[in-house]
Length: 99
Ligand SMILES: [Zn+2]
Image (cartoon, rainbow, N blue to C red; front, side):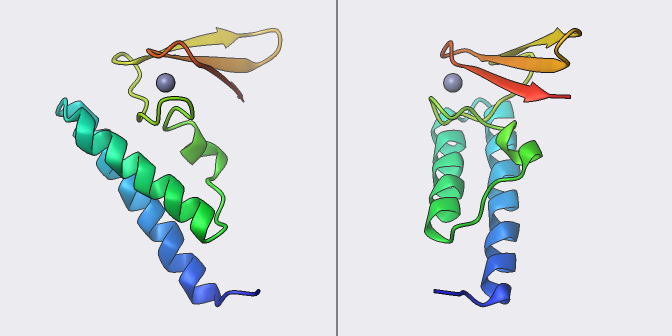
């Protein structure tokens, strides 16, 4: 069923806020809240059929549901030949992104 465009916009905004809250929670070593914010953002995404943008998808780990903080729980490898960035999470899950 088609949803009102206004609902979408509010949900998108809330997803963005939750992601930034998750990042700042992790900076303060607050893992419980960081995970919770990511969980809520992903739940909104599936409930309202709103996809994360490419940039937003790079902000958290799909496998363990933790926000990524480069230098803290994420290592980045750049591959010049394929122009791909490989994000290695502390849970040893890998994710690739084009750049
Ligand atoms: Zn992970």
